Image 1: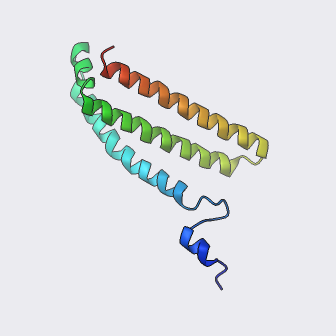
Image 2: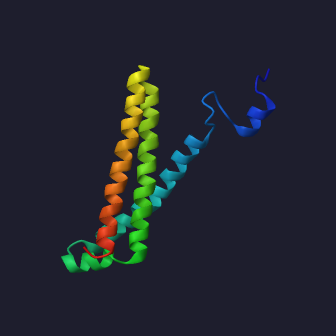
Image 3: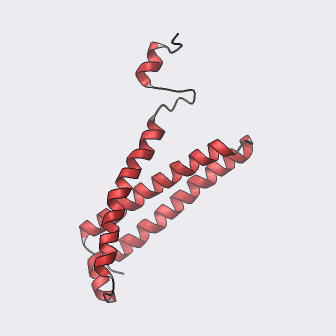
Length: 126
């Protein structure tokens, strides 16, 4: 016996009214991170042993800066969603859960902003 309403089937909404968007965003950001981290590892390996000026020039290319910014964005989203899932699953007290979710968001925004600032500073010539 199916207890779902037709509208619920269409929107794929669960009891939290978020549907599968959280799940899919976590998976999509993981796949994006896979490719972007492979690029970052290649960049690090290619610059191993290089002098400061060579590294600075390599990081000042627009494509490199763009890919690093995408990695930061994808990584911060993935980190925030993962921690949100852990907090929601393992913290029972509602007040503590709300505080932890807020701190998780603030921490993610801070880390993301600091990382973006560092990439932009390197990209535009620090």
